Amino acid sequence: MRETDEVARLLQELKSRSGLSYGALAKRLHLSTSALHRYCNGDVMPTEFAPLDHFSRVCEATPQERVELYRLWVVVRATRGNRPTAAPEPVAPAPPAAPVPPATAVPEAAPAPEPVPDRAPAVPSRRRTRRRGVLAAVTVIALLVAVGVVATGLRLRPDGETDPARAADAGPSTGSPAPSLSPQLSAAAVAAAAVAAAGASSPGATGGADPSTSAPISVAVHPSGWDAKCDQYVVNRPPSEVPRPPAVPEAAGWASQVGAVPGHSRSVKLTVQGTGWDTVLLTGLNVRVTRVAAPLAWNAYSMGEGCAGGVGARSYRIDLDAARPVPVVADGSGSLPVVVTQSEPAVIEVTAETTTHDVSWYLELEWTSGNRKGMLPVDLGHGTPFRTSAVKDRPLYAYPAGGQAWEQAPARR
Image 1 (cartoon, helix red, strand yellow):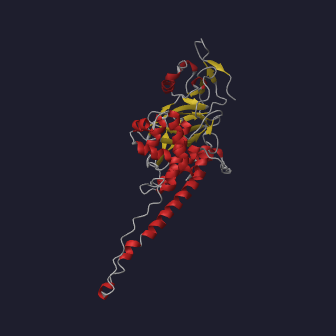
Image 2 (cartoon, rainbow, N blue to C red):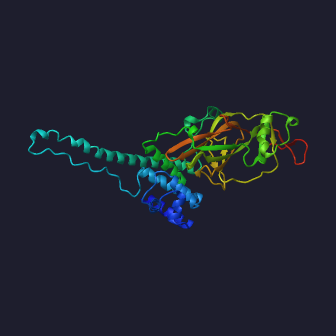
């Protein structure tokens, strides 16, 4: 099998680069030397990814190599199940020869058909095995198409999920064709599809996403994002009753004190990490709009002059005014999928913008780990959505450097 050979090749390459002998490496991995030899030769594929993940860490594999190793492992698991890779398809031991009554004992001839049921299940069993393999392959293909959308940074919402308020405000949607699938899916996207297929075909799988409460990841939300000096807020107070702009770490407290709502754009930074020993693959990011209304008729206040910071490692932008908002990868940025663990978190930066509405929204982070998968809602906590209101044509105030009071600035057009 090509993927099995690729796993062996990658393991041998990592081992060679590490400079460690089989004995030294086996000791660090708490494996027997013979087991390590079988992994590196492609004779055996572990039923859990943990040994290979530990192997890649000890050998200082790059993040790209770890994702590729995970992809190859889950493809093999999806197509071959839990069996060792090098072993041929397990065949049940041949049952003992059916007892044949002595030819001379005519009365004993009647029990002769009894051994047939002992042999008959062998054929249906093989048929069921083939059927499961076919279903797994079909599932992989279907999920590759679905995950291809994730790999391009796009997420489409089913028509039935269109927010009623948005539909009333934006008018009937004309719809748009589904995005064409790139002929070359990213390695991690294929891994996500294969993991899902393995979970769907394995005997213990539930067949659906795990509840978010069982997600093996935690998400820390930093509402101010990475360019807080570019932020604007709308506040239902005159300038004389609004404190001077806060330092970036104090922005959330300042906004809460004056009842401010982020204006024009809302930037959030998500720090995602695993909560246990398992490796988790983050496969996609969605946005869900819960409310759309007319923009707040309040004063707008700018937090600073100029913008600090550039594009993060994984940055997304969302147009909340679109009929179907989707996270789009920012220019020059990386994107999902990405592997996270308890010791290696990932940072995802999101900026959502609106020029014509007051929008409440939250994010959904898709994950998969082994044969488990799910979607974790991300908001301000306790089910409170993010909120962003347009500032177009609103009175805009800025606090000049060295100044003592808010001064009116040209309004955003």
